[in-house]
Length: 158
Image (cartoon, rainbow, N blue to C red; front, side):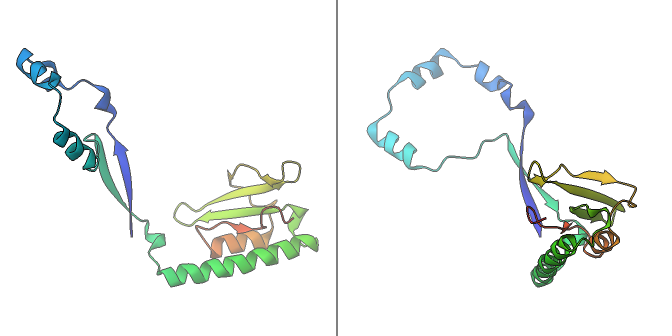
C-alpha cells in the first residue's frame, strides 16, 4: 500500500502579486454587503483545501509488502515471544540481566536497542549499537528473525 502525506508549501506566506493590483473598482465591489442568499450559499459549501498544500504519495518499503494475514500472524508470534523474554528475565536467564527491546534493520544491517530504566519506569531513548557483546544472544537472534519489529521485554513487566 501507499502512504499519503500532506506537504505544506513554505512559500505560502509570500504575498500573491495578483492581489497587489487591486483597483478602486474591485475595492468598491468587495465593500458591498452580500445578499442573504449569497451568505447561506457560501456557508453551506465545504471549505476548499488550501492551494499551498500538495499531496505526495510515498511507496511503502519492500520489507512491508507482505499480506495483512502474514503481518498479523507475525505480530502474534512477537506477542508470544515477549512473554518468553519476560519469563527469561524473571528467571535470570538474560545475559547481564539487561531488560531491553531490540530492533534490526535488515536493509542497513543495523541494530537499535531500548533499555528499560526501573527508576523512570520506562524504556530509555533508542540508540544504534555496533557492539552486540553485552546483549543477550536470544534477543539478538529474535531481532534478526523479526527484522523491522521491536522484540524483547514488555514495557513495565521486568
